Image (tube, rainbow, N blue to C red; front, side, top):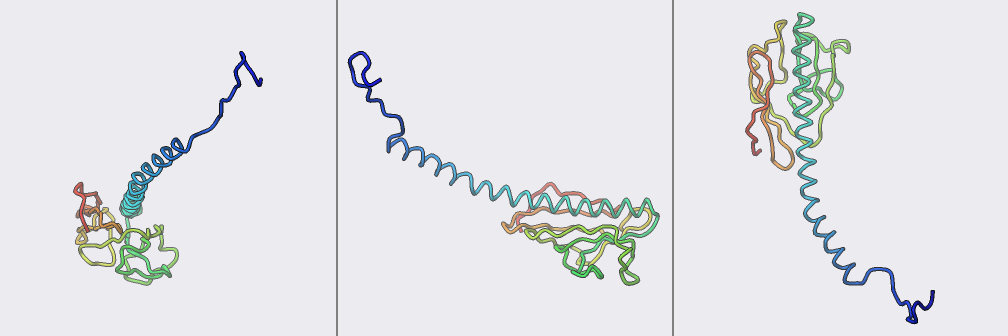
Length: 173
């Protein structure tokens, strides 16, 4: 249809340069606002993941000690998984061994892999926490401080009865 009702049909389809510029500015503004929030979300997710890892390890150790009526140890693992270290930021081992003898492969109940983005410090400075057959951690009560690379953190408190809880107050590392 070249002519309709005697007039030339000159309608062009597309965007003008001004419309494209405005659209690009809106996209840039949303990206500038969203990217830092997304990065903070990622750091918070890593912290929550490490909190869950610690709670799961300690719950498993306590339940295993009670169920099997034996002592169970939680400790940070060295790379060979044959000894405990003092670095709680490493992988965490749950063992049916009180560390009075060398760790054997069949002593390991479970290994919880480490998170690269958080550091963990134990207030007592010990390289292990042991549960007795009643599920108690006599003498090992204390707190674990978990910190992210952005200096945000949380504290986990281990009671004398062997329960690990998250302190509600966020901390600055």
